[in-house]
Image 1: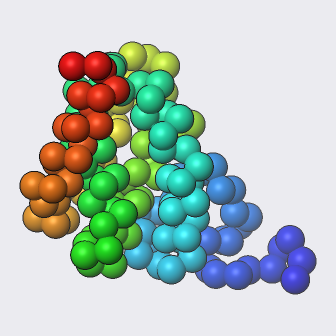
Image 2 (image 1 turned 60 degrees about the vertical axis):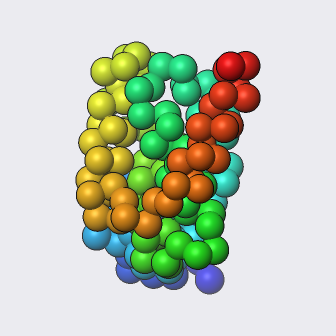
Length: 140
């Protein structure tokens, strides 16, 4: 298989860049889900630890991470959650995160949209796990 071959028209259109944003319409395509899962596995914790104190939606972000890893969460919901988490992890997005709180408004908008669609899958146990982690992280 050459570098120009197309494993999937949704992933390898004009050349696939694993660090570039993926069209949200393709969030549930299996190949895209694998890419998002890899992005989140590699980048979530390093970025979360670096920026958690600066973002007002850190508890929601972490709750979604716990929900996406829960075997009881439906696959379609996991796919959308992983897509939102992958967007958070991406170093390039609509508003650069180096702009402080303003830089996370696009991430917050992506999360708000995702929560409107699959937020019902977020259970109290996911929120409790997130709050417990944040308390341990801050030493409260």
